[in-house]
Length: 94
Image (cartoon, rainbow, N blue to C red; front, side, top):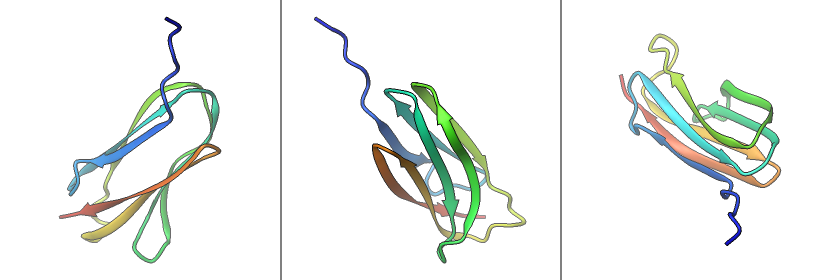
């Protein structure tokens, strides 16, 4: 059998709810442009974790949540690639 490339995947953030850090996992079957950002409930971008071309592979990012800057509540993690646009909710607790 011919091996197949992994499918493009963006998994939900963990832990969720998060207190000190949230992690995100992405599987890219081929090299492509990726943008991964964190937004607050009003739609304001708080952090850009990735904005550029990544090679095929599995990536895990850890977002340290700055307690002084982020209020407890609902946030959103948005991934944008040519093959996938996905948003997950993330609850922050302090």
